[in-house]
Length: 284
Image: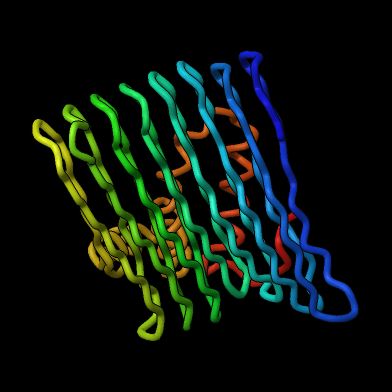
């Protein structure tokens, strides 16, 4: 177990999928306990090409009363790796949890996220992006549960799929009876760059309390022809114009990352993984 009791703490956790001569599997558990404010966690998943690797990670994060944590996750995997993750987060009164997810590569990535706002005035903010090509598959199931008064959540995801890739975002928000004053928002926007690609956006709201503010929205579409025309009319080549629009669409989720170096690294990885970028090995 990792316990954080000192303010302004930072830890970087790396999970590496190293292939052997034969297909392999690894499984791990991670326990985190945050009792301080302004704790920052960077979680990175990397791998090398080779024999197939199936990885499984169960992580449990508890945010104590008045605690605060900011988690940034980068999954940049080769197509020979598959990753299943299950994350549970429990947030006590006046606690806050913020997360940024950047998901690229891999044969299959499945992430189940269960957020419980169990104390009054608990807060959760999530930002996420996936950019897929080939036959890559990312499946994210997010569930935020409001169980106390005056809690809040703000969830924003972006997705891009090209060729025969498939992305899924199932985002559910449940406001339990007695959780009056909850403020819940969920939005996902997605781009399809190929007639064979698929993105399924499934926003769900369940409200059992009064005096609640809640909203959700989901869109799946293509690049704006007018924006493409505007750029091309000013001399920008078609491929460059497409890349600029896709990058701008995805980078909105990275604005919440405070560390400049980390935000720059995430942006560079995103640019390398965008569908119009040349294929290559994942960044280390």
